[in-house]
Image: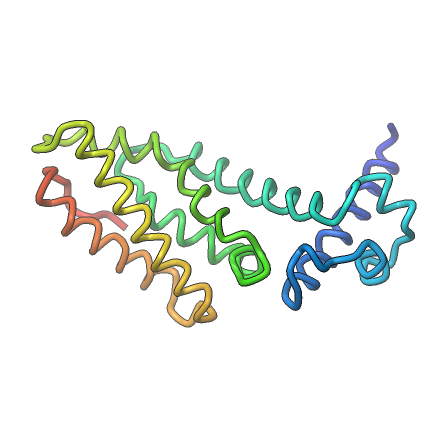
Length: 192
């Protein structure tokens, strides 16, 4: 396939993803039609069906793009003192257009539960690296508690329109996490 064709494919798929994000602001995926996607993306139906079988596949692609960005971010974290929460919050903010739609009423809120799983191994290694007063099972419970608390804060932030800065949200999550963890782990000083 030539470079010109590759560019055309990417352009068509990007137009469809942009159209999907716009439509999901107004209605759930179950009510999105191929006709309205094509009209908004300014492509014909045959082009749509060349790349996608139905509108939900575009949503799945958007979710995978989002996952890829988070996965790349986690893999680039070089040391255990790097803040998982700060990285997570900054990435949510960086992709706030996606975040608002994907985690909004017409998106997939389960996606937000799945995203931090990329941080699981990093977090568990971090927790275990410090002198723990807790066994592995308790550390697992701590992780689940911190994960869902973080998700609740981030969801409120997203649904509130990102009125606080990413640093304010990250500071809140890190502060709550550190205070909770201090009962179980000997943690180093917080680094920004």
